Length: 80
Image (cartoon, rainbow, N blue to C red):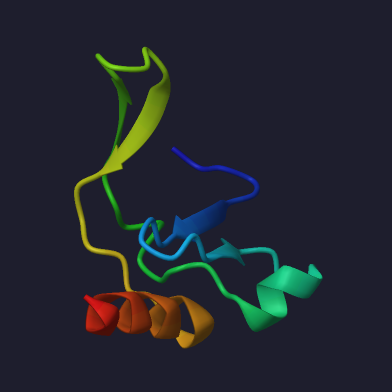
């Protein structure tokens, strides 16, 4: 499964802060907030939520966050 464009929005539910990550190196976001590594190696499964009935993608392998994505996750973890 290959997607042309990927964006990730990380949200800290405790503070309301968020950061958007993109794999598009041409976009302003992509240069500063790169998407996680290992996306292409992950096994993806489409799942339906029993609560919202929406569809989401479940990833079976670990993603590696870098730069602002890693910093955002680290700060959210340390604030707990």
